[in-house]
Length: 73
Image 1 (cartoon, rainbow, N blue to C red):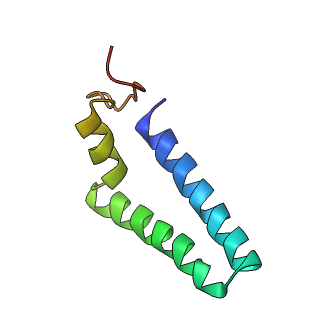
Image 2 (image 1 turned 90 degrees about the vertical axis):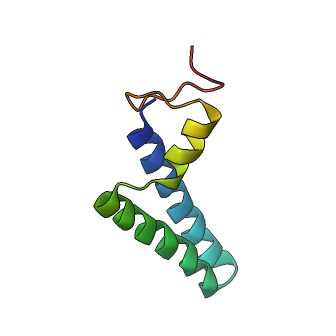
């Protein structure tokens, strides 16, 4: 899986989770999709992506942006 696909999957999941929690719990949960959107925008502008940093430190992300779950082969 490429890092771009994982980022889109995580962002979409968190936006849906935030919408569901807003509907079920409290309007304050709208802060979650707001944070996700702001993080996506800053990542597009600056190129800084926190999940990619974590995956690189774990040794799961190679130079081509391909994720190797459990470590590079």
